Each structure stands twice: as structure tokens, then as C-alpha cells.
Picture 1 (tube, rainbow, N blue to C red):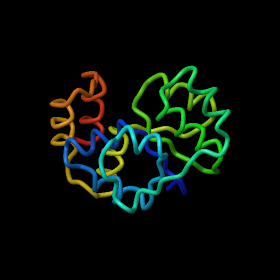
Picture 2 (cartoon, one colour):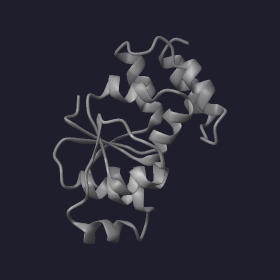
Picture 3 (cartoon, rainbow, N blue to C red):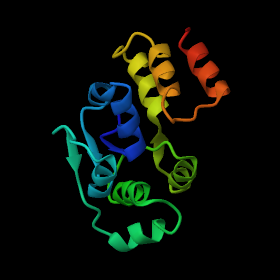
Length: 151
């Protein structure tokens, strides 16, 4: 498991919408996010989610020329850490993070990991709940995830 996991807003919002917030804590002991992401989330965050500010704000501002504040702050904070996994759902943010050499997963990756390690029994109910939100998931991704998990 990575020693540091930084979550972006979309993961927090989506898991909150589908009552799956506890999955984050059970899959990753500690999650870090930034004040910008906390503000975007707009709700109370549990104490097991640590809030850290980016030290190199110039780097964050540079990334903001391509991404929103939350994603930029997550990537900038990751650049100040070692052995980081970023939880990002936005494709452009994922591509930038990958180019910068970060390990990246998304909300579906968190749910898949939860199934792999036995935190949840099935991913289908979570995928079905996600499909009822504004989260866009391609049918190919859904089919592959269900097939990989024998569902």
C-alpha cells in the first residue's frame, strides 16, 4: 500500500453521494487532502482525512493554468511527498499526474481495491449507485470491472 494517498474532490463527493465514504478509510488508513479540496467538497470531513497546504504555491499556480484549484493543489502537494497515490477522476488531471510520474487511481479504482482486499463483497451495487449520479462511466469500463470481479 502507498504510504500517502491524496484525494481530490470528485472522489469525496461521489463516495459521499453513494454512502461509500467509509470505503476510503478501510482501503487506505490515512487520506490527505488540501484546503482547496475541502472548500470544494463543502461538507464536514472526518478527522481521519488530514488537511495539508501546499508549500510551493507557485507550482500550484502553474498547474492551475491547466486544471482547477482542487486538482492542482492535489498534484502540487503530491510533488512535495514521496510514495504518493493520487485519487483523481478527471481525465486531463490523470494524464498530467501520470506524465509527472505519480501513481493514479480514481473512485472506481478505490471501489475495485475495496473488493480486492475484502472490504466490500460486490462492486456492482456501488457502480449502480454511481450511475445514478452525474459521474460518467463508459460501458466498457463497467463491463471490464464487472468481468474482472466475476460479477
